[in-house]
Image 1 (cartoon, rainbow, N blue to C red):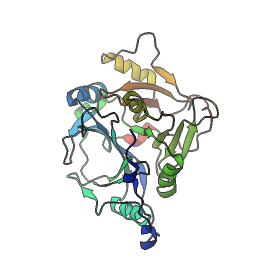
Image 2: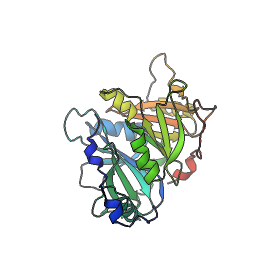
Image 3: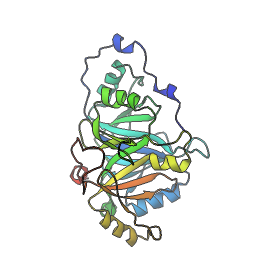
Image 4: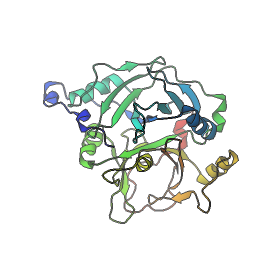
Length: 308
């Protein structure tokens, strides 16, 4: 279900009352995705045992846990606020060079911001806002004490989270926030049929990660449809190698179906689903054919930026 739009209040007149000349700090990529999990033991089996991501307790006033793809990117799992919640996405986080300066920047441009950033035990600084559709968006400045590289790092199926996607109804409103205020730019857009725009990829201003507007959902999407749309994408060099590693760990593809799919964006992918129905869209970094619908307009990602 759509989050209530009133959470996305842009305060009238605030921009004119404050200094709007501040320079926006660097926004370099995806920091984290926070999801609701019903059964932490099952989730641990998926994220740690299958994906190979190290589990660390969340350093917040929650009972959540984090699974690190690298020293600065993770999936955070928390308990849902109520049983039977269809939408499993709580928050998408982005990395910034200066959380406090970005907080002031957004406040000066009319966005409702908290009075101060939050500081965690590792020294990271963050704050939370709402985009125009009520999606929770967090900006995090990495602290001086990131988690150490785990002994199990060699088991990671991916060491990079390339993008996150979520349901969008009003592209113009989202573009005003992400493109107009935050400096994101179009990376690629296309649809299942030539001429349709079902997916819009908006790349961060100072890196190669992106968010994906999922524009195709019906008015009342099911939990399964939301779980597919509200997704995250780990990057891999080869989905063929990924499949081999998965099968070595006991995973089996659906009978009679090739799990390796060539997207209309020209990139190979392999989808997994976590115990709560959230899709993990493993995707190759580089396209293997010309994309449908439009050309790429940004720099292609690579695994090198995610070294621990």
